[in-house]
Image (cartoon, rainbow, N blue to C red; front, side, top):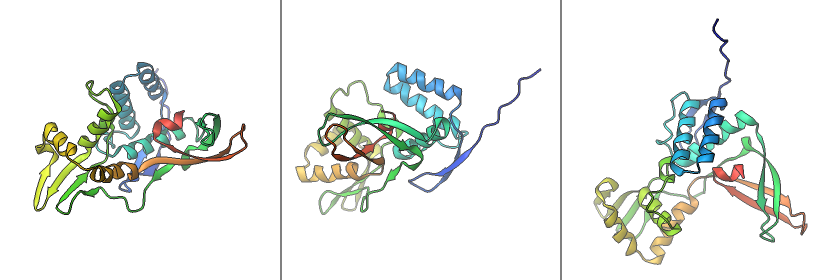
Length: 235
């Protein structure tokens, strides 16, 4: 006799970048196992593939985890987690007033959203004639090549991955037609002001963010701490 089929509840949310409605189910035991295996592996590529597989499986193959900005995928994953093991979570944060006291705080994962900075744009006007058009990092961009060993290397690798177009007057250079060497030379000749403009794109781009308020038990000072990025919500 065949074993009974277990029903699975489904939910719906809107992706922050497009407002597209997505149907998803919570994690099952097989997804929990996949997460545990990925965490034990401590390998970026294994974690990336596991993450992608879970997103695909829990959306019934309707969401390609590599086709959306990372902030969409992080938001979707966090809501899956909330529906799977509970919306209440306790994380540990560092009090900013003394920079050392570790404080456990409770958060409602269902209330964590993507912060959209007013005035943010993916077009960066470098000079009067030169403009860069940027794309947002995706899940695949989180895995760095083995040759990338420093924070500086990681920053410049991410920048090059996010450049879609460079406009020079009426001429448009597409990323697919640019070599890494050409991009390195282009970036190296930027002034500090130009580079700051590009950095502003990354600083203000949409991100998973939540503000927690608490009192430092040692100093009795009230704190407000910004929590950003998916990993922070599992600290």
